[in-house]
Amino acid sequence: MGETIFSKIIRKEIQADVVCETDNILAFKDINPQAPIHILIIPKIEIPRISDLNLPTHGEILSEIFATANKLAKDFKIDKEGYRLVFNCGSNGGQEVEHLHLHLLGGRKMKWPPG
Image (cartoon, rainbow, N blue to C red; front, side):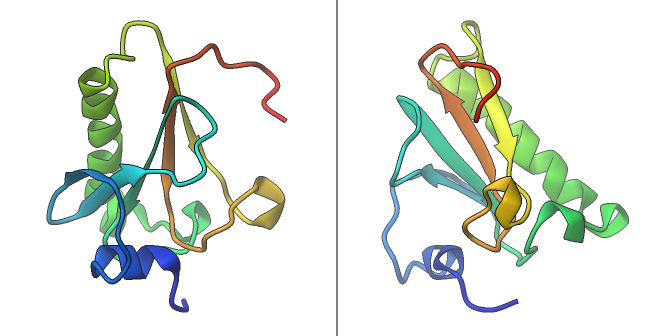
């Protein structure tokens, strides 16, 4: 995998509005939000896309990503009204950065189909 903007954010070479950080994950506000609350949750290790996950190896990190989404939904007070979690995979799936990331979107009514 090549260098991505997320690699630079992890190394603190590019500034981000970080809302949560652990040894394994980083969560920050999206610079192009699609909802009033739009947070990206990424692993600090490089995993290009969801299809590159190896569950025995990455299961703990994936679990932490979802636990972080749950915590942030509560912290941002969108856990009761509802929110959306999205993984995009590949260019046809809308993935713009080749580094696994979960979108946490909330603060408005979501529509279906999404687009």
